[in-house]
Length: 358
Image (cartoon, rainbow, N blue to C red; front, side):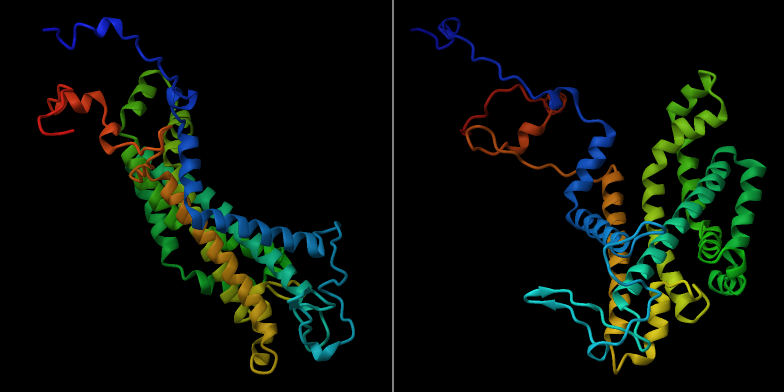
């Protein structure tokens, strides 16, 4: 009786299918983070909408000496047309002369809203950069050096935390016009918003400084500065990036609250919160003066929060999402195919098919 295995030598082996180069080399950490971020639909939509809002705000009325395509400036007071009502039409789409309407003195609300968006986004970015820089410096120093350095820096952080930021910003706002206006106010908000960042970075550094790659860097003769900025800080970039986006989102709300009570951005500068404050009395008679700045505040904050949520999922190593791909035979890969040979060895699998199974 001929054994089924006796003719195995006569069967020509199937040609090996070359694996894609990307699967052979593997993905770098940056590409893994990018793929996870792109899989987050809300984050992708948020960053696209935010970029569109930024492009609209900058290109419409221009920036500094660069002119824009919109015919009115936020400082001009043309004659009131159509009772100041918005001329925007959706079907068919038509902007008209004043798509967002006009205020009580005739200023174009579209130009003013775009200028307010520029100022609010600028404040948001400045606050995020300043708070992140100070928080990273203090948190990294406290978490890495420990001892007296940690005690002094953390007690200083606790002292900053107990200062009411809104009250301090209100006091600073009264003199901000003489000291640089909007930019001084934004820098001050950043200097009182870094405490949460410092605590998070400190906690991350306390964990990372005990890892093996830090000990290897010390044995190789690396300085403390190189260990902090070249070895530990890149591994904490996830916490830093996510918290920075949250700081930026809270910054625009803080500026809106200050401007709403008249203690934030002062005329002739314009912000979205200041526009809401100036037109709150006309909410019942001309609501479009109130709704358009409020709508842009909501859009900007939602976009930043969605981006921060996507970055959190992208940098979180516990986020392991596998997508089953179709092969050439239009068959889905079984979950067992994802197991490695090491798993088979640990489970005692010999590769033979159990009786009764197809």
